[in-house]
Length: 325
Ligand SMILES: [Cu+2]
Image (tube, rainbow, N blue to C red; front, top):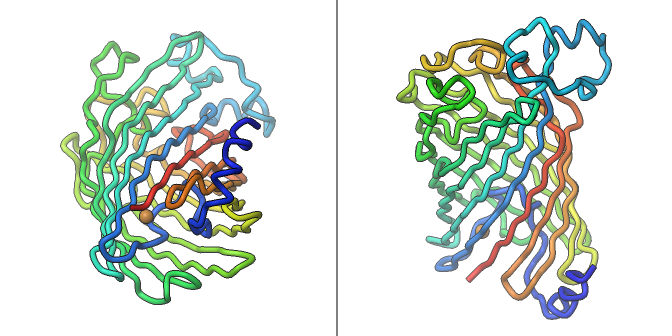
């Protein structure tokens, strides 16, 4: 509430266009020649346990979230239902620069904190620098105000360390795949975004991919990842808008395997990492001052089709502070 009263005077003087994608979306716009944008985004995701064949059999379709936490030592015994929960926090920095009115370069890097709770207060944590990407965004069509079609092509560099030891297996093993800080591979990042904007409504649709170009140093590669999403937004007042978003994400299985990770359960099994998730996002954006925008978005899954090695998603939040020069 106090934040609102602080924002109101700023909003009155704001002339920054808020017809922009939700805080969790990147690569949806370009910048005019010679102009810069800098951004910081914080993402938090809360994840539930894995579904397991055992839990399914015992509970026969009932909510898996009801399972009790158990001693980490019991976890190895897969005849018993168990639960590992996980949180992911990401601090992302980005910079965009308009090389021409049609071509914008975008650089992004992030710092990750992944924490897995194995039950009974036993936690493993992996944190550090994630992967870094450099992308080119090109205006294929449109005026970038009322309508635009933007194609993007980027490369993700493996700056995230994939050799951090896990204290779960006496430090001899690397963290399981979904706890890794990066892919370990050079990834191709294609994207295509179409947006429309008029006085009373704005919307966009975007497809993005992460295609692994080689095997990493540990002898595996993550499955390719594809996201298809669409959002719609309404300006409520000058400097304030709300958005709704729906996104489908597919992530393939790991190919090959990390030799330090023995498949003592689905979580460590490279062939149990595939997921398809449909999620919804509800967001709001505030013009803080001319050229500075604060966005927030809450996300929750609508439907999931996930392998036994994948955590079920619970909810997430993204905060974004983006400023143009
Ligand atoms: Cu930008």
